[in-house]
Image 1 (tube, one colour):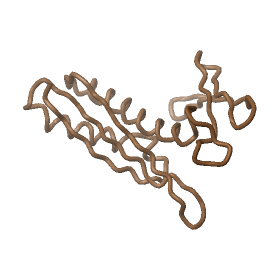
Image 2 (cartoon, helix red, strand yellow; image 1 turned 30 degrees about the vertical axis):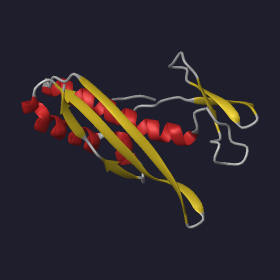
Image 3 (cartoon, rainbow, N blue to C red; image 1 turned 45 degrees about the vertical axis):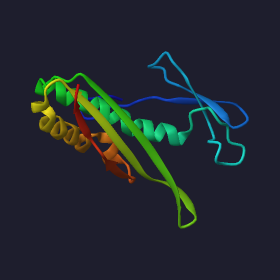
Amino acid sequence: MSSFDEHSYAVNLKWSGGRKGVLSSPDLTETIEVATPPEFDGGVAGVWSPEHLYTASVVSCLLTSFLAIAEYSKFPFEDLQIESEGVMRKVDGKFIMEKVILRPVLTVADAAQEAKGIRLLEKAEHICLISRSIKSEIQFEPRVVTG
């Protein structure tokens, strides 16, 4: 069901053997192989894990939120690169994604735009619906540089 106030995103998973599966969506053409991360028994190195996807959802939400705000604000920029890190930790005997660290680096042509760039990055982080929907701490370390 989809309306102005509600949207739905279908994702399907098919077990492919061992500790791996394949994610797909009727709305998308590409698939993603997923596996238990290598830190756990039977885990598989070199394959996207739920923990990677969790972190990816936060960082990609920051990107898309910033792009919308920059477009709406008619804010010119040359580049945006975001390093992110999801930190998993055992709390009370159970693993949780304790925090996601976001390190965006926004490149602008004019040094006079640096302060506005920081404000727009902060606003994007604030409005990101994924960040608002999770319990993990979001550690935000934005930088703006002149290209």
